Length: 236
Picture 1 (cartoon, rainbow, N blue to C red):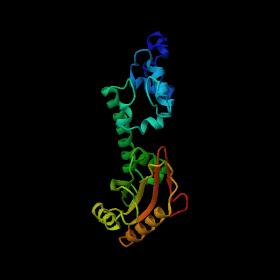
Picture 2 (cartoon, rainbow, N blue to C red):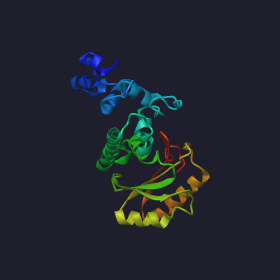
Picture 3 (tube, rainbow, N blue to C red):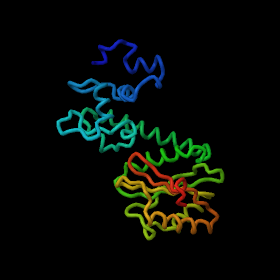
Picture 4 (cartoon, rainbow, N blue to C red):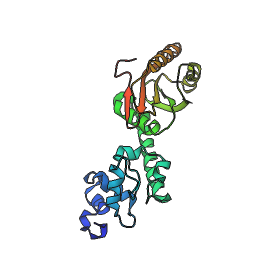
């Protein structure tokens, strides 16, 4: 049903203003962001398909969906280009929402102890790393209260002990006067189970940074829509 045919209190924007954002479903929230649909498809239907079609057929009017709000938040600008009905303005708005989410999480991690809420750091890393098509090794440098100083993507490509240089991580730790670090990398293939190489790399970095009195608190592996903490799994 077109929005204009809905009762005023059932229209997503009016409902949000009257009852607050928590009263809206994911579909309704996305409809507020999209504002309008396309010819032959109302904005609510478009939002529903965009969120819930994981592998749409080639005859679908909007192309491939993102399998829920989490998938949409991890979509790239190129992903959004393939969605019929999302012009430059709407793509820019969705990308802006994603960047705001990243910055909000980064601010939280800078203002309080990272491990006061372990899930927050996983979500933060998923937003940064899950969408990348190549492997990236990142380091979160923390202060003495385990608050985030900075996150830096340091290496990319196939990650092994020979391609991740402990001396470079050590130099950055000294530069930022970090007291601890969280290591992170992504597995574009989808699995988040650590390999033997991941475990060996973690131990190498722990030994190198221990010489500088910098603690390695965790090594988080990120895949599409998921993340695994090696510390939580007892693999540190």
